[in-house]
Length: 473
Image (cartoon, rainbow, N blue to C red):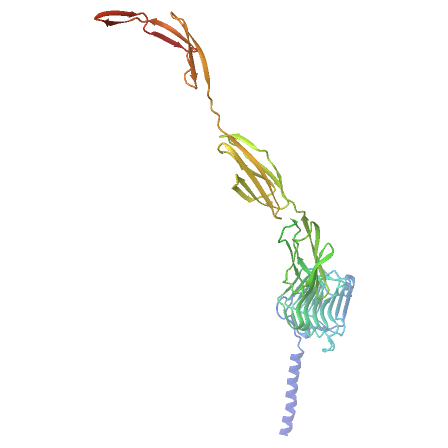
C-alpha cells in the first residue's frame, strides 16, 4: 500500500511542474517599448516573435489602396500609416509598395524565404514611392532585402536598425534623399548597392562577408573639370585636368570638337586625367572628357579653349619730347595692348632704368631733372608667347636762358663848356647817366721857378665839377 501511495504522488508532482512550465512559456512576452510614430535608432532592432503575427504577402498600389487596406495612421508625417510586427514567409516579394506619397512606416517585421537555401524573392520592393521608413526589421534568405526599381526611382526613404542575413543584395536602391543608419549586413554579394542616387547617407552600419563589394555606388560619376581658358598661340604649359569619381572606373576618351584626340584606361577614382592643349591651333575648341565605368554608365564634362592668333604687342608711340632744364612734369607715356602681356623694359641711352610685369594699359616714365643734352629712351614689351615690340622716344633738354644787354648812350654836357660825351654800359647795374651839368669852375694857381725866377701861373679851370643826371632823376 505504501508503494501505491508513493506511485500516486509522483504523477501529481510532475503534472503540477508541467503546468507551471506551460504557464511561464505561454505568458505573453513584450518587446522593448517603442515610440508609435518613430524608429529605434539604437540597439539591435530585434524583437520577440511572440509580438508578431503571421501575415500573407502585402501588395499596395497607391495611397487609396494604402488607406483602403486599413493600416493604422492617417498618412501624415506626424501619424504615418504603420505596418508592424508581422512575419511574412514567401519565395516571392513579402511587401510590395508602388506609387505611394503618404508617409508609411514598416516596423518590427520579419521577412523571410520559405526555403532558407533558395535566396529568392524580395523582402521589401519599392516602386515610385516617397516617404517610406523601414525600421527594426529582419530580412533573411531572400535574393534582395530592400529594393527599388531602377525604372521608377524613389525619394525620401529611411532604413534604420534593420538586419539582412544570407541575402545576395541586401540594399539595392535607386533613390534620392536616402538614409541607411545602424543597419547590419552579412553574407551577401553586394552589401549596399546604390545606382543613380543623390543625397544619400550611410552611417553607423556594419557590412561583412560580401563576395564582391561592401558598398557599391554606380551611375553617379561626377567630374570635377577645369574652367574655360584663353591663351595665345605659341604659349606653353596649358593643361586641362579632370578628376572623375566613380566605382569602378573603366575608360576615358577626350574629344576636340567631336574628334577623339586621346583615350585610355581609367584606372581608379583617384586618378587625374590630363591633356596638354598648348599646341592647339588658333580658334575655339570644345574639349570634352567622356568616361565610362565598369557597368557601362557614362559621364562627360566640356571645356572651351580659345586659342588666339600669335602676334607682337601693339604700342601707341608718343611724340619726341623737348623741355628746358629745370622744368618739371615731363613724362613719356606709352599705351600698349596684347592678349597675353608679360614683361617690359625701359632703357635710357642703352642703360636699363625700369622693368617689370605689364598689363594692357599705359607705362609712364618721368624724365625731369636731366642735364642739357639729347637722350634716347627705348621701351621693349614682351608677351607670354615670346613676341616682342619696342618704341623709341628722343628727349632733348635745353640749357637755362641767361640775359646780356649792351647799350650805347649819347650824353650832352651843358654849361659853360658845351660838348658831348659818349658812354657805354654793359650788363646790369646802375644805368649810365644821360646828362652831365657843370656846377662850377675852381681856379688853381701854382708857382714855377725858372732860372731863379719865380713864375706864378694861374690856371683858369683846373677841373670841372660835374653833376650826373640819370634818366628819370
